[in-house]
Image (cartoon, rainbow, N blue to C red):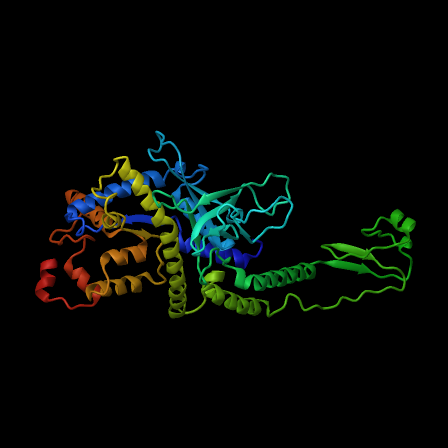
Length: 473
């Protein structure tokens, strides 16, 4: 937390993976549910409205501190720093402010630990005497290596403060419903892995040494910036009218002189003494090149190009775009983990309550698993990748749509993080308002963007017939 490069790595991931929060886009299987496109669109809008009612409220948090989108940000930071994030599924009585009882309780993952007696060392492995199951670092597994429960301490298990430590065993899934009681978010790197590895673990030593080196160079620069004067005289210091920074009476009493470096410092030298300043050649002229080279290795291990890690883009457009695309491969993969381990399970649990209390209608939801899966379809859209050269990016998107390798919906999500359906509806309203106000040029064919076919062809480089040009004019 005290290393700037480490903070950049963590927060760069948080900002690009989650940003302001992953937003729900309901995508039910209308064909399987035998619904028309209009009926499916209406159901999806209602589901999104209901989920937004719950997600935007701080009452969705058991501690009433964050809304669901802020919980995503904290969970992502916890996952990266600690290796995993733990979310407890709890319920309260619905209130007037929030007609849903579902609550999320994000806890410090350190609290998920193996029970041990007070005053002893933290155990990483133990056996539950009641179930005879093994407990690995707070995760209880049965003989088939299936996770069955988590052991959560009431405080930090390795804290030296005087608190009565108690562990609560929380089943991983409900016995009757099979709904998760605990969501453990982490990246699995090896088989039979039950806890995560901190994101900075492979480079923590390099980051610490780089921080120490930076601090040393900074101190050297400060010392070189001191302006210090040494007065040398063959006479005693008591015979000089200038007493300097050392009190004369104290100097005579102690018969001792302290020499110091500091801004505007004046030191008196004893007779026969001289001073020589060693040129340390600091700060080093290779400081920037060295730190940048080390940042490249750190970024390679973290899957973040050095330009994004240090927020300095000095390469060409092609090199900068290549680095951004490479970073976004990792960001999208991590976003998929967050969506599948946190957002989608929470949404499915929310739908169970919304349909059970009648706020959403979904016939057959509780009777057929396939119908349930059809209603639970969703996409989770986060911040867009961004554009280095917007003109080139938009032209490329237009060509991808024209030749059929992409869709308008996909390009809208990836370029701006927006929703194409909402954009079309809004543009239609705006064009109608401009038409009623007489602001649209006469003869212009109304497209969602309010442009004529001729203008579109000019921008795409296509030739325009003279007759068509005359009509547009």
